[in-house]
Length: 259
Image (tube, rainbow, N blue to C red; front, side, top):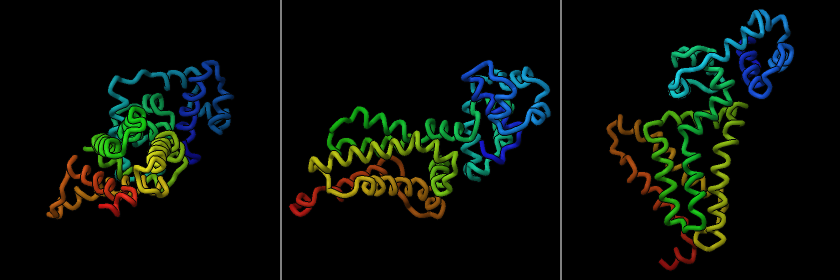
């Protein structure tokens, strides 16, 4: 939660976090964690029991998915900092209590978005089983896996780029646990392949950016260009062309000269 969040939201968020660790957390503990006075706490909730009843309402089975889908729609129009948790609850058709039970704050919400809709977790799984397999095998699989993860969810790509540029505290924490780990693993794999002589030597993070950037731009630009009657290839064949073009450009220099 941000410092600008209404007191009741902060109380619910911090209460959910504290009570998950210690069911005996007192009103004073919760008030201190939320940065409010006991008087403010009791204005929001007549008693500790009322707070517990509010945040412990069991959500319906599909509530989490509805909230995540609603958040994607809303984040297509605004930043994470601008997003109101109350508005999100209304958009998703869920109660505030159920929303905060599932996602105590924006950082938890955005991390869930990244884990559910971004390509980071599926890509990490590819690297986990790829081992030292050569780039000609691994890179096309990485590109296809990433594409399949976000196909139909272009809003995720837009949201990710928007939050990268805004770098709110909520985004920084969530991205560190997901995207940065995936990019770091990708760079480590490329560094090993460069050391083995299978790829042209360069800074591995620049190599990562050169591939990821082209695919992300394609995902963002293709729908716009198609609306403007511009013939742009789409689908898996299109992103595979980026993978093969990247592999050709990343061949070791001696091999390139030989060809």
